[in-house]
Image (cartoon, rainbow, N blue to C red):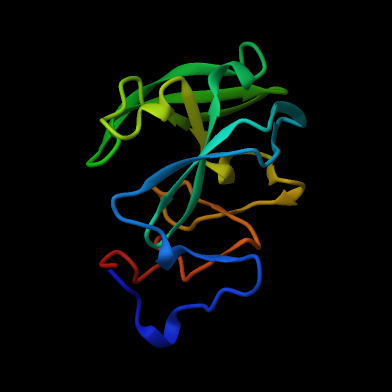
Length: 167
């Protein structure tokens, strides 16, 4: 599952390589400040998150459902299955006159080893006005399905770009 050696970015001081993340993924607590806006409204501001770290993917942040502004999260159709975390449900995110349909997901009954994700919600950063981690604006992981949050803390290359499906 490694990219060609010549393409692997070398992490600098204080950085992590997504190629050092495990598979199956690891879920770890984080106290980084996560702020998300949609429709020019702050919908979440929290220092309580779980980072899911998986080989070749930037971290995905799962935030407590109760950290979101009231009424922002609404049920959306659809589901997906992760071989590690289990069956996911989807939510739309509404704020400031905007609606990001199916832009959030959660695991109502996560698989063994991922119980820390219960009651938490992840967001596709590309569907929001802005997501920040400790004040740094997040870049979105490429691809229609991936929800990784890219900051200067992580280096790739990242799965999701054209030509990376087989990684």
